[in-house]
Length: 199
Image (cartoon, rainbow, N blue to C red; front, side, top):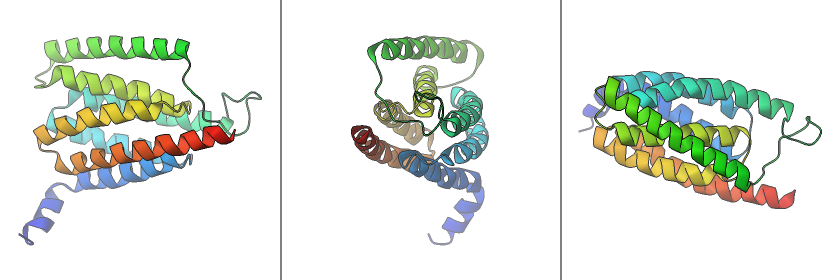
């Protein structure tokens, strides 16, 4: 059994590295440290390959969005856009009804469009579920870039569905990562809520 661990690591080193980088990303997200966006970008590049290799085509495409949103998030967080003066630290805020309605509609439309694309033009075995988590990830990451508290609630849902999919696909290191993501999303919600209460 112990002999198989180095063999397994050698065959799965990209996924293990992606998991470690992604853990760093989520910890920095909870702590609101801007370097999270650099780790998010590196993680996205690694997971592009992993998802391609596993047939998660929507998940793979999502990594291109994560690369873009990592750059966007870095700019927004470093310039303090969204603050009253446009400068200084971007503050945590609540999702208002209007923005919630828009984001909910965007999620549903993306889910439908991605599911149709996966169903018609790929050999995806899980087009509806892959589309659901991909659309949710797009919306949740945008909310993270804008420091909207409820991003963590959406991440709890998306990560929970993802855990089931990754177990089914045999991506066990990624399954463990997403279980940690669920825990960290709960912690993130509590930490960001405390930060919001102090402002």
